[in-house]
Length: 169
Image: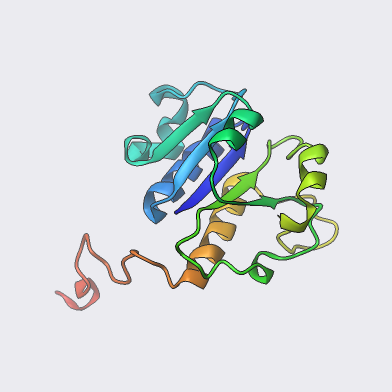
């Protein structure tokens, strides 16, 4: 199982987008309090659409509460990492993988990152660019994990309209 972990997220639209990503990829979303918004339909409606009810998600009271419940390998996405996502080996689909992302404004606290430095990764970008949007980062790194694992359980053809949709009159 792949888990997306948001450390104290602040923007409901980002969390809604990440819920949609988790629903589409079959991932579990973990939210670590305090949250910068309420987890209700009104706040997540636009970005999360109807995926809120289709997403496995857990809210944790604190970082320590999350750590007490997490049973797997933690990876941290941060601008301070020096390794790229593809430099990690995610091929063992039997492992519980937790991809940790920080607050939109300040990221993951440096004490946490320093304690897990070998598991920190950076998404390469131009040097004068500070960061990418949080939901984009979650999708990019999640996709890399899935790519390495061969996209287990994911459809490779159009299901809703049918795989022959382009060739029907």
